[in-house]
Amino acid sequence: MVIKLDAQDHKILAELTRNARVPIAELARRVGLSKTPVAQRIRHLEQIGLITGYRAVLSPLKLGLTHVTYVEVSMSDTREAALQQFNTAVRAILEIEECYMIAGGFDYLVKVRSRDIADFRRIMAEKISTLPHISNTSSYVSMEAVVEQNFHLG
Image 1 (cartoon, rainbow, N blue to C red):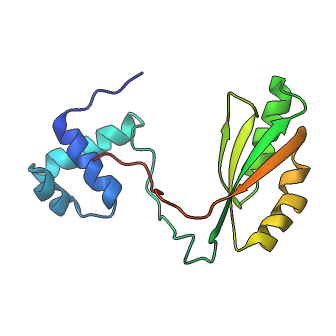
Image 2: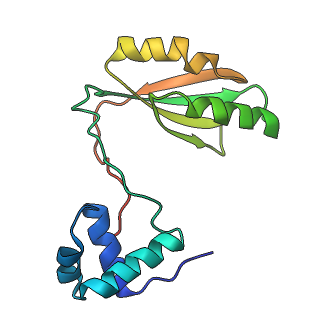
């Protein structure tokens, strides 16, 4: 189901994705509405599931997680039960920032954050390589983040 948004909703969402802690009064001023309609629109966007939550976005660099590696994962078994076992297990690895099931020459693409190559090697050996139903992996070390941001409107 595609949710239809008007221009005011887009403005509100653009502001919230830049700073979810903006006070309602300031948000209302920025989007050209009064506080009550802005609060009602936000509540509606939450109720319909478009806004799914608010959270602190941490800086991986400030945490010392400067090393990014992408891992292609090929599965030995791609039946639904095996995929679900893998999905559940991969969610438990904190160093995995993102994981996508892929249609193509391999089955999953995993983004791993670590302190350095030695830390990544440990994560591969102790965690990723022990995931269920993996037949092989290929790793690609990122040299530089050219574009890296959270999704937002505007």
